[in-house]
Image (cartoon, rainbow, N blue to C red; front, side, top):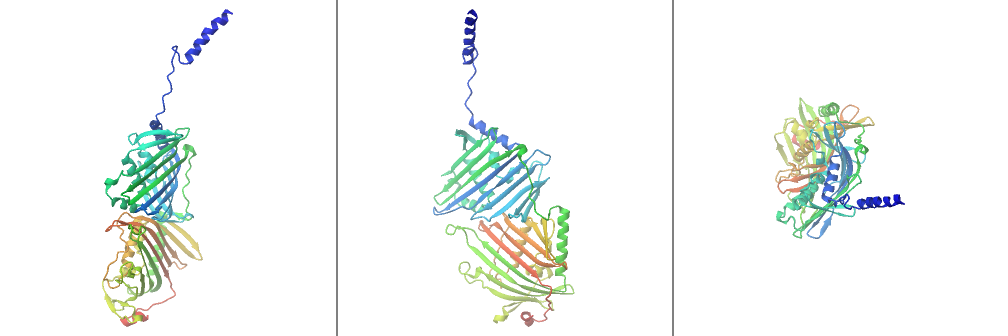
Length: 527
């Protein structure tokens, strides 16, 4: 009985102590610091040895409170691994929308080389950007992780929690910069230009931001959401929504580089393929006689206006044939040039320029003449000066052989069918610009030079979405076909408008046809 009486006070004392009595208090759990929790998860995720996430960006735009549409949608998956001597990075991107050209591309690195290749769903690449990655390279430059990475304690004014979401309140300046940054990633220089047309004092007026994140049980980011919208003077509204969903971390992330069948990327192999094509190209041009048909199509959208948000398109077609004969290292030629252009229509420049046919030829005397549509009775022969053999090739649509170098071509894909081998080149951005500049000189809209047209005005801010270049070689190791297809954007410097462009070139050689150089003007249109 006494033992029971002694036990009771001891037990009661233990109960009192465990309940927080004076015998040994346990402090209560402090309330969660939501801002600190989010920042810790953000840091854990960005510094993880490996992570993978899906991203989706949706943009929207409204002009004059009436015209509304989606200018761009951007989505894909990003993989990053730093748990080996060489950081591995892979991103697959899909881009579509009213103000952009649909495309899919891959950005990845092999060793210290970072490569961006545009490709279709069959992984048939068309254009490549290439650079060496430094030891301090920031891979977030190539994805939407930069918004998360730039968030800091000073950027996040406050954080609250609603359900499982950590709701963030951000500085206006940070939100504004993030909005412009994301728009720049989706090739919307056009939208940025429109914003700059209005006073910057309007920033912050009507700017609405919504940002939140969810975390997993290991205190890593699970999702990150950021959307913004701004209204300027009730004339222009723009907004976007970014969604990132983190799928895997650490050892669960695996990276498989895109496979492009029959493709070489090493400098030695690329150079070997280039030299094969260059030899065939020079052999085709050096034949005693040769013949080819050509077609060049252009489509240029010269930017938006409030009245016409999708811009004004200018289209033209230049086609014809060129007959060539080489005598004593001089190229004699007879060329037919047919121009069909919207420039002549009233929706552009009225009647300043007419569609026309013309013939040009170098006579055996060495003179080069142009005659305008002799079959229609316009026998107006004009002596053209300043021609050498290179200018003949450039004028008559043959691309410069200087294009064929490793500086311009970083990958080559080969396919063989019916004794024909096709070499598909992945060009650098600078190579695309050079080709477009060259064809800008070659396409003659105004035959008398009364009005000068710059079809392409690519100086900077250039973004090529497609640059397909194919050379096909026959069984005699001669060029049988050259195909080019370019499309993308650039900024027209005089107006600062974003310009959408398209160029298609097709050159077909026929070695069964012969040509004898003409010796007088009257024979130009009859040969």
